[in-house]
Image 1 (cartoon, rainbow, N blue to C red):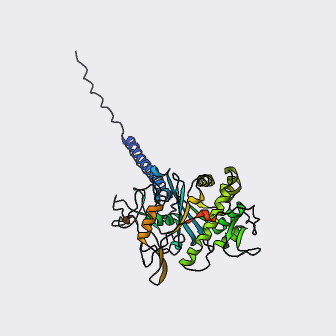
Image 2 (image 1 turned 90 degrees about the horizontal axis):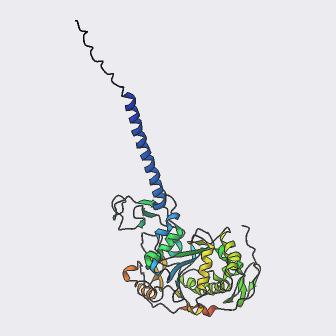
Image 3 (image 1 turned 30 degrees about the vertical axis):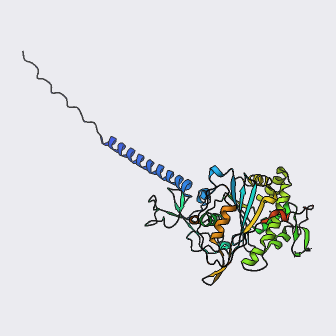
Length: 405
């Protein structure tokens, strides 16, 4: 019986893999693109948070880590504050009065270091200028390390603009006027700064008017457009106050001469504020002042509330325990320009004796000061603010109405 021939097994058709290959390639590309996008977003967030934005951007959001503040362990015992008044020509121009305030919260004392505006800064790469009064108007651009979150100075700048400590590329940031001013005390005097209060002249006038004026023992007649305040104990308004504390001439001697007048005014302002309840101080003084067109430039994040808290804390300090000193030094010249040269040894003694109540001793190496001359001994006798205390009269009607906000 014939058998049917065996059927050959049917060959299986190979599946087409072309479509799957294309799909795989597309998926890989999508993953790569997504990874790049995530990297870009992450890098932008990192630069914004850590580095302060674009290389040429504003650094205001990184101010808290640019300058040195009091260590946390000591912050409940002492606070350092920068007090400044701008010149009358330009709100972004030169400063007119600069003082360092050391508030010993534990011992209930206040020490004030008044700085002549011609104070010499020397050849310091942190500053574009050599004169203290010019720092605010001409802030130095800063080199910033995004990895270490710090400003970088020579000699920590490595080859090809890298940070010598970590090797990362340095960014150039636009300088901050207030931060550069704070750095004078960080770098040159070895002191921290926990807050700053910079007044435009219009701001200071408004403050005096909002508290009802001040009563001071005028050393000379003060004339405004509408009123003449004769020498002696007088209640004066904000406009007259500005004229009273203004310099009567150029040079360090005239600058130092008016320090006593500024002490008088500050004492009277504190007297007025100390007598107010916190709610009234907030509603009638600092809230309208800070929401106006010329607020105080401050470092606190919650504005007037922190100012009120600081004023209330200061009210526990007797005026007999508030003492003002003039920065030790003398007039000298450099490259044809006249400056106020510090006396290094006297500065070191004064800082350790009166302005460093709870920190480690400030050493010669902590000072980055250039001494041009040291031909005569400075007067380190303090002026106690208690000598300026006079009874504050009733509110004074301003001779110049506040401008519209």
